[in-house]
Length: 274
Image (cartoon, rainbow, N blue to C red):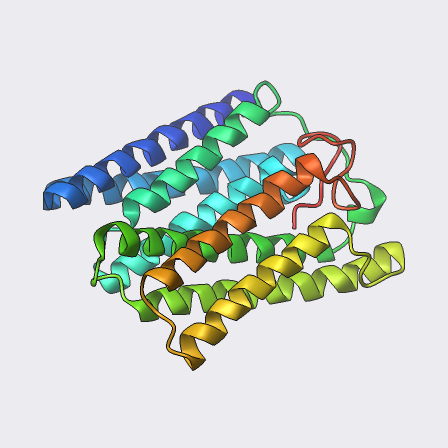
């Protein structure tokens, strides 16, 4: 029963996010408020369904769903949409909705493809993952990635529309928030690594590329604030940073296996995701 329920929920949220993306793009192009309002409704609906998927997966697994890549993406997409809705509510700027919804729709489709037939499957955690550090480490990583996804969506709109409604300051603040969360992710991961493996840092591929990502965003924040580095080049750097985030998550897991991946698969047995 729960397997059927979570399957239906995930496919429903894919539809909601996909429709939201289309409606945001068309609404922004035509400047029709009704379309933009409907797009927001789809985003809210998808966000609620996303949260329900997390709750149902928690019941199925008997733990918070944080132990593999697909579970991580449920958090990643949910927090991304939540942050976007907060941004839209505060700024009343809807232009970036299409890009953000497209990102979460694609990620949700990846979840559906990778977990096809296994939505109700939950394997036991490996001993190294049976730690309270798992929760804080992975959730801070999801929050960091979500912040960078939102920032990338805003930056894309600056690039393709030269949109003055999306301010440089708003992009900076979102990146700064994501940077703080990424910093926490790295620090918490190092503490956990010392307890699990006896070393704070091993130059594992995921650790290395997470550090590279951290340095890229640190450089952006420094140049933007200290040297007033703005405009097209700054927006490109924000987008490039998010592409690096995606590589750190997808590319490293598939191409450069290390301590952060087990058995080379996403659903079983487990994978540390940050």
